[in-house]
Amino acid sequence: AQKITQTQPGMFVQEKEAVTLDCTYDTSDPSYGLFWYKQPSSGEMIFLIYQGSYDQQNATEGRYSLNFQKARKSANLVISASQLGDSAMYFCAMREGNPGTASKLTFGTGTRLQVTL
Amino acid sequence: EPEVTQTPSHQVTQMGQEVILRCVPISNHLYFYWYRQILGQKVEFLVSFYNNEISEKSEIFDDQFSVERPDGSNFTLKIRSTKLEDSAMYFCASKQTGALHDTQYFGPGTRLTVL
Image 1 (cartoon, rainbow over the protein chains, first blue to last red):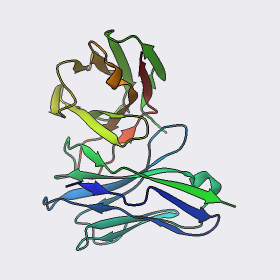
Image 2 (cartoon, one colour; image 1 turned 45 degrees about the horizontal axis):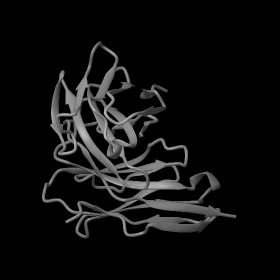
Image 3 (tube, rainbow over the protein chains, first blue to last red; image 1 turned 60 degrees about the horizontal axis):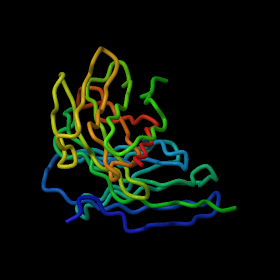
């Protein structure tokens, strides 16, 4: 089974609208972390937001928020007030095990977001 | 703001040749990683490194691959005899120690093309 599933290969959103990018995960480890990264066409991987499995509140970073539903094992990224510069590939990733260790990230297949005028 | 740097940005090599990809992690980070991304595919973990030794490696990271921290700042990935299927973007990442600093920060990548 895939550890990280992103079911939307591509999404379109109009400028200034909000968009939700889906991510579901699969782990039996009680301690894990969920991350979202943005990859623009230039290729770099830009960290956006992090949610720990024990965090009581949903993470927020500026226009990015993470809709964390632990029972459903989902960690959807919400981008509010989309901008043209948000057009990029978005990857969901998971770290299994305790934070502060050398644990690797496992990535999903990504969602390509296109923001239109 | 400190960032992870990687050199070269693009490397073209002939099959069977050795390549060394270089990374300078963020200065106070102690965990180091290499990932790769074949064109159009997802990012895959290769190896993690801490305290001058490999912490974990994936099945991709076979005997053709090695990592080294030759000095206090560089972190290198060597591919001894490149194959066509090694063509990919290679990302270095680093992370601080401590549970409050769990984010891996990625470098801009090195695009490796094996001919």
